[in-house]
Image 1 (spheres, rainbow, N blue to C red):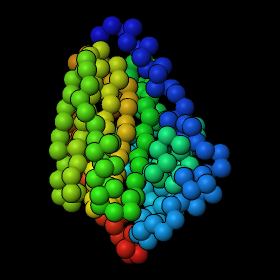
Image 2: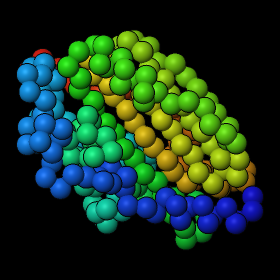
Image 3: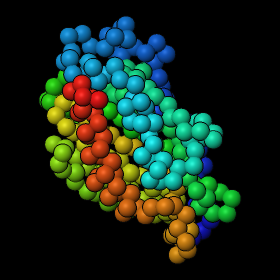
Image 4: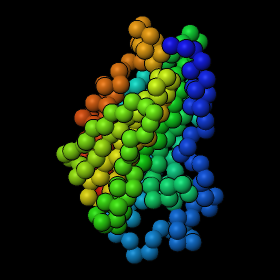
Length: 234
């Protein structure tokens, strides 16, 4: 592999997209930051959650992917939270995310990435279906695309992975809907150059293992956590 592709990793050193364009006053559409008036009580409750607390500060990703730190908090594992209405690019979501640092993919050069996880509460199922359809990823090129449909316990869902032809960067987008809420994972990270060159893998997972873990382990666990909490069973 031409090591010129390493340059592409610089794009993964960006400030986490999570809080980009945040509204400084937390306004979420009604002019006073208090959310939509007369909204569904379940959605209203979910909108009040602290997202990183609900999502265990992304610890499952740390454990599975071998994340060594969040570059937003060197040496620590403290992701960023955006409450409902705080991220102007996606005001309907409560969001937890961070820039991530992974093991070295070449000598002295660590893998980098961005991880964003969103819970999107809607007032009814019709709104949730519309939100899901707007978020569900579509194949893009020129890249290798892997698409997997997601079923039970979700009403509908899809995982789309895209890998640049150079192998420099990999993208995984997961969107799933359960009733009136939508869940989304956006992940991009440096490709495992050691593995691509036929050497010992740098990461403790293969791409296929990552996809399987997301669909078969992580998503069902999040579904249970969110529904239990929404029902007052935490």
